[in-house]
Length: 170
Ligand code: PNS
Image (tube, rainbow, N blue to C red):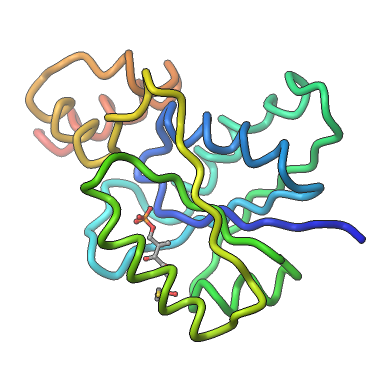
């Protein structure tokens, strides 16, 4: 049986923390489906199509760097996460967990998703400790105020964020 996991998120933008979680998740499942969507409580900097293209570009080479069998698909979805996971035939939903600040929100989501379908388990992974504090929201804030975001995202994503910030200033 092929074990499929979905890793959902808004990825606005995808960070080195996300990429580390993707690497770890790829070790746990036969097929990892990254689901890019729009979080109803956030106003994104990048459109869904832009975020999808960005994630695709950044994860393209991950499988080649792993020593295990690896299949990663990147798709967008516009539905309940649980319906997306069911459509993809997933047995697990992967979420990254940073320190205590994430816990309340993730605890609630995992609990409600459990009520929607108790057969699909939410699994929390922790990024490398050096990447733990990274949050897309703070990457955008640092860029808006002219700070250096190079430690938190790939060079390609850093260029995309800087371009967007500069365009918004004009
Ligand atoms: O990267 P984010 O913004 O923390 O991801 C949150 C996301 C997209 C996983 C969450 O907003 C979500 O699951 N959205 C889909 C709609 C849904 O299923 N909502 C109910 C969750 S219990």
